[in-house]
Picture 1 (cartoon, rainbow, N blue to C red):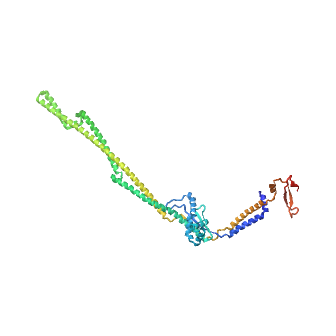
Picture 2 (spheres, rainbow, N blue to C red):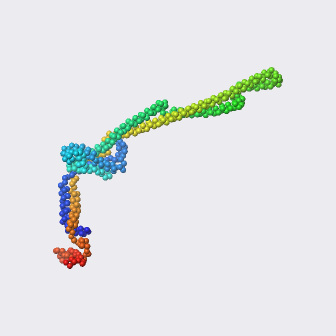
Picture 3 (cartoon, rainbow, N blue to C red):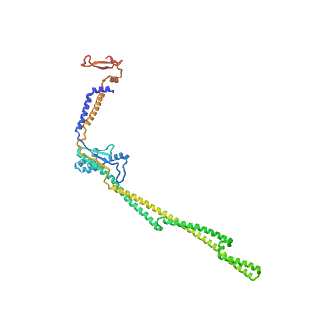
Length: 474
């Protein structure tokens, strides 16, 4: 259908369209005027999401602000908040409301829950754009009741926000309290194990004893190095004494051996002189030889004694070296044992440190949760309290009237089209062409009734003739 055909139809069916428009618009206006007046009270709350938490010290990041605001809107509209507001106004104790509840539910369920289901549709909560503000409105027939319930919802929301923070803190406080007892018991057990270990080993967990024993091992090692040099030297002298004992420095430096050797040399000189003068068989010569033999025997005896003392000194050095080696091994074993004990004690000390750290962490969280469980502050502030509205917020007469006119117009158009569909007419050449499906041969002008010659307007009546049709000559 073209626009021209639509205009022709509306011109022909204008009465139906007008009656439909007047009927719908009148009905909407009548219903609007007969509807009871509604009053809307509004309260505004401010949510501080920038200031740090006075206990936890955390700040809500800007990325989570929109989510946080949406969550708070859901909290305000929750059954817990509305039910708390109902109970704070003692609506569940009102006899008339209880009577209505019994009639509506046959005393099933809870009257407060029933009231929440009735009041929630009138409660509107929306965050204000680009601000940390939330608007809370409630619409009712009584302006005072609308304001009272709005303020009660706001107070209930603030109290609920405190409870939502305090209740988990109390549960956490109880948990951390029991955990602190366990952590303190673990710390005492670790300290008891360390004390028992110290008493069993007779030690104090310090590095002083280990340093002393280490210094002693170093001293023994130094002594062994010096004694090894002495023993090596004494061993060399012992081997030298076995090969040529009379040339040993100890022998040559011995005063008795030197004196005996000097006497022997003098007597040897006298023997040579006496032998050349008296002969070898002279009693004095024989006696001299006997004395010299005796002197040689004494020299050999003293030489052997000196060489024996060198050997004895070497044996003593070797024995001392062996004893020193044993002492060093014993000291090294003792030092290793002390290190093992120190490592074991260090493990026990780390257990104590870990238990102390765990106790400190639990104690810190316990103190924080105790503070949070006792707090009565929240980040919600009332920026505007609801007051009884001076005028009604609904029904909106102008808006509903405009909507009725628009709806009536649309329904009027629809009524005209429906009537045209039910009773179709050939109102223009397009309708003729579309209905008959034949070509147009010509148009005949028709003078309108009352038109004056020269000023009359032609009204064209389209004549559609079907070629080769039996009805053409009729």
